[in-house]
Amino acid sequence: MASRNHNFIFMLISFLILHAMILFASAGWLPFSAKHVIIFNKLVTRATLVLHCRNKGEDKGVFSLGPGDSFDFRFRVNLRKTTVYIHLADRDDNPKSKVGICSECIWSIYEPAPCRDRRDGGQPYCFPWAS
Image (cartoon, rainbow, N blue to C red; front, side):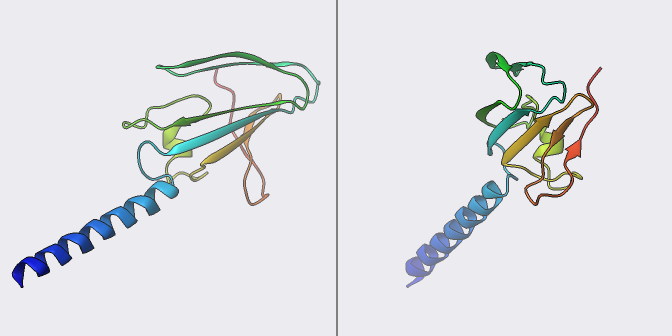
């Protein structure tokens, strides 16, 4: 009888841990969370936007986006959450940041600033260009 109780407790704890991991992963709170980044050229001057998407460990190459064009890519946040493209883990993969977590991160590029669009249709979050 004791081994049945141990097996039941083990299975229950395993189920709860697995369930919690699925919930945290779907909310983007775990390392290796999947991200889908979409970048739109919304330059008012209708200029071509040239992107060079690279991270410390991977170079996705140089891309030219005409007016209204978009480019997308997928990646997983690394264990130390130091993955950087246009995505910053402390900003875009942190439930405590003012902009919240995004698993589908949609960026509109304007002359004054790059802006991350909000899924609820509210005002986008715009950030100053890095100097």
